[in-house]
Image 1 (cartoon, rainbow, N blue to C red):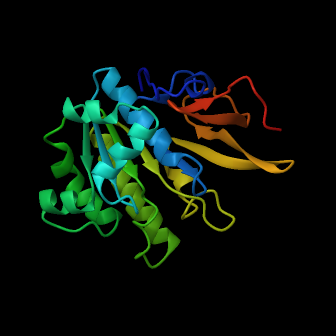
Image 2: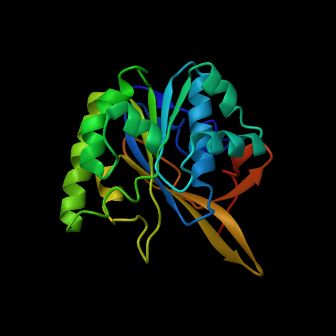
Amino acid sequence: MDGRASTGIAGFDEMSKGGFPQNSVNFLTGDAGSGKTLFAMQFAVEGGRRGETTVYLTVNDMAESDTLVRVAEQYDIPLDEAVEKGLVNLYDYDALKDRTGQGLVDFDDLTRSIDTLLAPTDADRLIIDSVAGLGIAEDSINDVRRSMLRFIRRLRENDMTALLVTEMWDDRLTRYGVEEHVGDSLVVLGFEQKENQMDRSIHIRKMRFTDHDTSFRPIEITDEGMVVHNEGQVF
C-alpha cells in the first residue's frame, strides 16, 4: 500500500497521516445526520482535484444521483464540476440496474456486478453510500460476514481505494457489527453531549498500516464542508 488517498478534509488528513492508505477498503460510520455523506462527497471531489476517477454509488434514501449534486452545492463543494469532467461517476439504484441488467439486493449481487460497473471508468476510488441495507436478507451475521468478505476481496482485485458508508445500529458501532473487523479502517462520526448542545466529533477507531491519531476530535460543518479541528479535544 504505497502512498495515501487524501480526503480533502482539513484536519482529517493530519489525523490519518495523509488520508486513507491507497488500495485499502475503509468503513465510515455514524448516527443519522453525523455528516457521513458530506465526508464521502469531499473524498470524491478531492480525488478529482488530484486527477483521480471516482465511482460513487448511492444505495440509500437519496436515491437520485442529482440530489447528491444539489446537496453538494449547499456546501460549495464542486461535485457537479467533477461529474461534468468525468472525474466522478454517479450511479444510483436505477442506473446500476440498467447498467448491469439486475437489481441490487445484497453483497453477492454487488460482487457479481461491480466489475461491469467499474470497467468503463478505470476508477481510482469507490464510494458506496451506504452498505447498511445490503445484508438485511442474510440469515445470520456469519452469512453477512462471508458475503462482505467476498465483496471486499473483489474490490481488492480492482486496485482502488474504497470508502463504504455504514451506520450505527442499537449499541453497535456499525450496522452488522462486522464491518470494523473486515475493513482496513473504521472512522466514526459522532455527537457528544456538552452542556445544552450536541457537538460533532470524529474518531479513527482503526486504520491499518498507520500510526494514526486515536483522539476524539471536534468537527465543524462550514459553508465549504467538513472541517476537523485536529488540535482540539472533545473530552
